[in-house]
Length: 145
Image 1 (cartoon, helix red, strand yellow):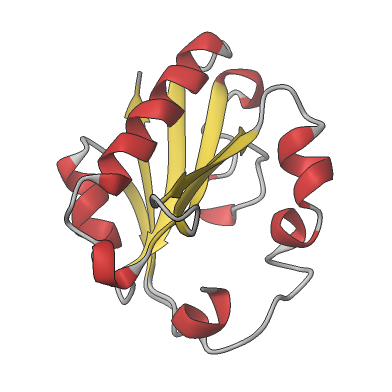
Image 2 (cartoon, rainbow, N blue to C red; image 1 turned 180 degrees about the vertical axis):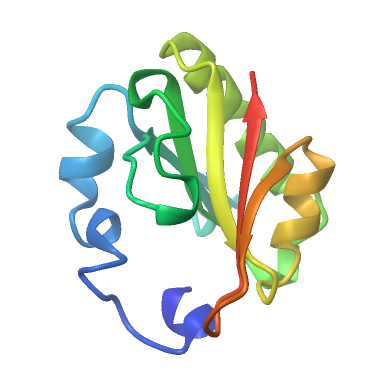
């Protein structure tokens, strides 16, 4: 999905969590990645959450790391979008975050990604900052849970 959406392979600067999935999502109790599978056991969607790390200049100092989760890696097979798979994954992540002691979820997205920005707005995420420099047009969003 990274190659398809961003036209490049995994980059250690941006994809540490993908490259080190076990270390980031399995070994860390407050982090998780969830997959959705079809009846033939094919992976058709993912969503992940990890403890927020204050690494973005546009929102520096905004969040308490211990109570803020960062949502990411939400991808749904393009042939299966708008069928509720993303919503089911998101509902599971919300439950995981509540049980893990998080009270806020942060995410960043890009307007060029198909369906992402609109999906997050429909789920109640609010824009807290936008960065329009460069190619990515990053939108920072949050929701209280």
